[in-house]
Image (cartoon, rainbow, N blue to C red; front, side, top):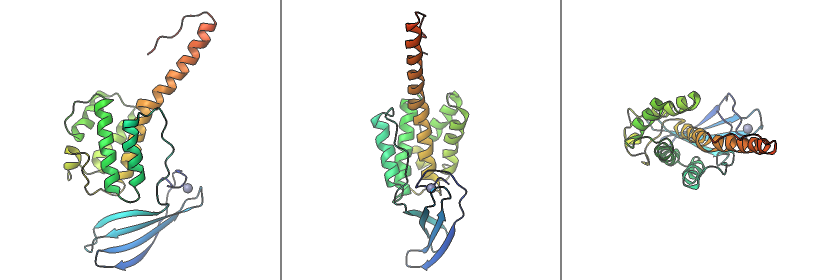
Length: 212
Ligand SMILES: [Zn+2]
């Protein structure tokens, strides 16, 4: 997992403590310590009385720390993403719905997919081979992690607030973040480098590079 305090990835060892059943279900608290920042991560997990997993809430820290969003990301995309980060600890469902909506908007407006449903739109971008393979694999897995086969509403109506699978909400945030990097941050870095090189070429009286 990624430490919600310092964002460093580590192989976590959870210790959990059962709080017992109540009228709603079965409760347990889990904790793990991050070896990098030495801080505890504490979660509260609820199962239905049948034993089926219901939800896990991040209790400490309250919210997941994410590196500040680069300013190259346009406001219309950044807003949904920021809100999805903000509500993650209180509602994975709401966070996942915001992320799915943001993902779909990115695919339609930046990747140029034909609007249908999210499942098909993901397939279109994979078929177009415009993404680097690691980003393509992550976006492909959105359908598996979210179990789209069992929950077609996630594909048909992306902003719907419906049950999420364990880890789904966080996975979606990671995918949206990597698409931001691919569509906005990386091109801006390349453009800045090209500009710097062109300034040098101009000074030297040589022909400049044309925009790619
Ligand atoms: Zn940490």
